[in-house]
Image (cartoon, rainbow, N blue to C red):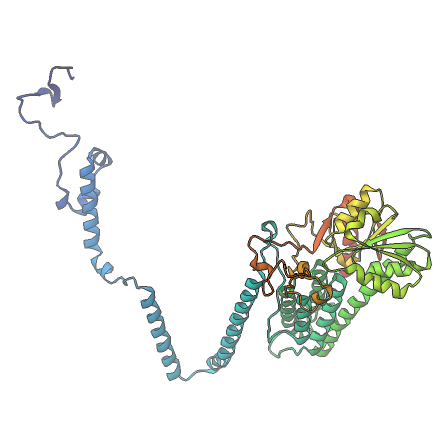
Length: 526
């Protein structure tokens, strides 16, 4: 026990008490903290130490023990550590790789290659050439994207794809390359026109297609179609109806009987023993069938929808749709009045106006800008709209501004009829136009002459105020103005609450029946 203020301590060593204090003999070593010389200990002695002994060591003793372990490890593994390769710098690594490549080339040139090696050597220059072309195309695409990105987009829509000019790819069929160029330049717009042109390009591709001798035709043709579709998507993002058509064509190609499996393919959808020309003819026949189904669907919609238009009706429409144009033409036998709402930058209402004035010269048509929508709805009793896609939740994806027209009509209790072919139905659900959309080029917003937009979509037109104090200098563009962003979304989403009826080639239905019609279409395709 210890006594306070006594200046000494009492401890028990063994059975006899020993007092330590001023003038007392030197304190014997503490048995709980032994004094050891670790510099002479062997690995076996260190391993024999118990956990209690480790706990009793001081910090200095633990440090000395750790240093001794390190010395023993280095001594034991001296040979292995000496044989370890030194760490090279980047320049040394590059030099070493070049030496290895040179040595490998000398070894391969000294040996006589076999058949496989000869074939590999023949294909190697072509592979290098293709790799170089891919790198060049990627660099050109980056340069083009950087040029387009000079026009800053609104941050909320910065994740959306932008228009990009196509690059030459020798593996792409000429019809696909020409179509991609027209997509990127804006010479072909609208879902119906884009799908129709895509099917015609695929038909030309299959006609000129020559299957290789050492590969299965269906798999090789499917890869060619995938590459072509990806090229078109790079030129301009595809619509959902284009994806549906592409999926249908791939299913047809996948069902083609393979030459080596003709005799044993009992469940094949085509006749066994077909030649390559016959297989190509079947694919072309299916593509022609899809084109004819598109036209028949639009004609059916026109015939069914025209029954809802009576004498004295005032129909309001916005944008352009091939099915809506045929519907309005079919209804020309009645005396109704048409209001066409037009908006920048595409001015699709003008195209509809010119087409209807030639087909129906007696039809009374009023062209209204988008700013006069509320005034135009005062006289309208029906709104007929076209869509690019009808989602499974009943929402309609259409040209930007369609949702505003539908909501304004709903506020005035005007029924909204949507014309949609079944190939435009989508299994997906979309709630807004922010997550999935497409941004148009900034030049469409800046161009004062709408006719020049189709030929030069990426060209920035200068403002012309009619006086010397122009907003921009003569050789400047919008990208030179700091802090200016642009937003040109091409599509919007109309919720199901603002759609009264959907007319398709199957008849009228509420928008809530979109999943049912989608399921029937899938059953027909199967």
